[in-house]
Image: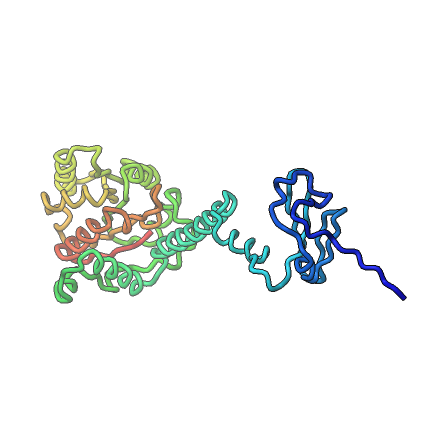
Length: 311
């Protein structure tokens, strides 16, 4: 049996029929070129192989398709996609998610710190002293242990108010002092002038209280305190029990006048430590916290029978 073999011309000037522009056909076909394991179909313009991926190459209006063998040097599409993803900038959504996680962590931290500050007033005398002494150590890092010891508080200087379970608001201030204060006089420390006014109203106003803050002139406050100390000797005088002040104003008063150190009567100090300012700081963690602790130590040193209560 005779088999016929079709051969392609090797002439360089004979262009395959699927090439429309002979100038773009810039290589020579020969028989060896066809022995590469590929089946060429010039009518369809498709190059096929047994293995590999198929890609399309455009030549003007015609398209070639060629499968890449595993031995080719072309990069894998999956690898390119992964590399591009790793190098691509974060989208707005990804940035938003990242910012959201950061925001949530920050919010959780702030809530924890807030709860710790509010819990201070409900601790035992020992725990209150320990917490305040830690703050003092941070405020005065250059002092020696012996010098710090003079600034530290003792647990016996505090009256615990753990048993008070009502909300520690300005409205409940009267109820609180009625249950816990025993001394004939009490100094109430508040962190702001506005808070001084709020507590003043809820403790009976001018019948029982005297406001000592920066809205008054210091001279006027000192004169009023001196008048009260003289009226005490007179019968039927108007008894003022609560002296409501900010730390800064009381610091100036105790430097100018010994009025709070006179006599042997007991003196209670009530600190409005549950009130949070707009920055969620208490009177201890605010800028006046250092001043407050300094004033407290001075009063304790100069006056006998002083007890501190945290509201």
